[in-house]
Length: 146
Image (cartoon, one colour):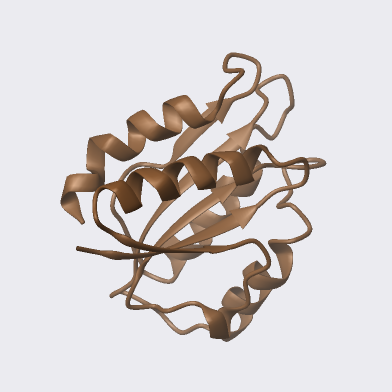
């Protein structure tokens, strides 16, 4: 079974709820999971799968609790081609920079040559009242690869 780091970027709690739902599904499937709401790079194991669950704030920005990790990765990490990851981006399509937080994190990991296990999931708050539901379906679609 796989070991998973769930990295959460949240302001109002939606991303936390999604992360906890995915955590439970992964645990039920026998995987080892650790949640990180205020992650720092030294706490994250690059040998584990990184599952980033983040909302978007302002003009397509990362939530404040995720910015320090993002900056630390951008400034300190060499290419990480062995890192496997997936991203759940929460946003609202009525804003110009829909899911910008998740897109930024996904693009950073791609720049560092990390390997995406699944296409980024973008959940639209204008269409979905319970973002954990599409996130759970998305996870089930690729969880067998880990």
